Image 1: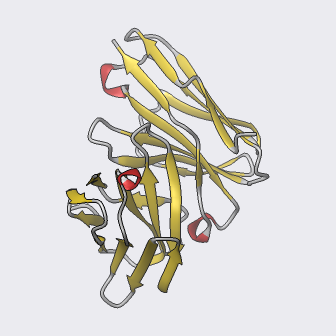
Image 2: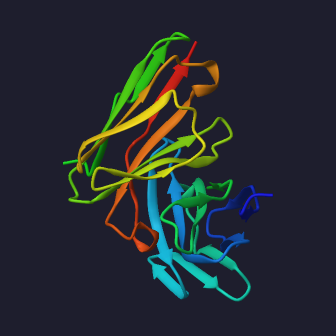
Length: 109
Length: 114
């Protein structure tokens, strides 16, 4: 079993819908990252958080350290949000990222 | 003024050949990484360097040899290429204490071994 698990693996929604992608991890972490991989292949870091909640535009990331769970939310989704969203955790004391398998999000107009 | 750049973007080569992928960052970061993304889009760390010193070396065949001539560059040399080496290779960089620092990714190098 992977140390970082995401769900769902694939998600298709209509424009405007509220989107939630979940990430669970089994190790103690020092930070949790959310990344976005565009259809063209480039990877962009969206959030890095170790507690609480962060917001950037229509994107919100939350983390519950006790439950070892993080969520990425997208409000008022748009077709340009279509991408693969990847959760990654940094184990305590380590400097490497351990990745989830990604969630492929498709937003239809 | 790309932050993290990789060359080449695409690499098609025959089995058994030796090839190199170059990575450069102009962010002033001390830590650089190589990741491999397989056909199922799963990313995995290969190597990490901090200020030209190897700090992470995952279970990677020793046909893969990273080289960091200075802290702005981390190149990946692959000897005796095999079919299973076909993947997308991403370089990334961050400030030190990389565990709590945002990583900046290069555009990726698509390697196809025939």
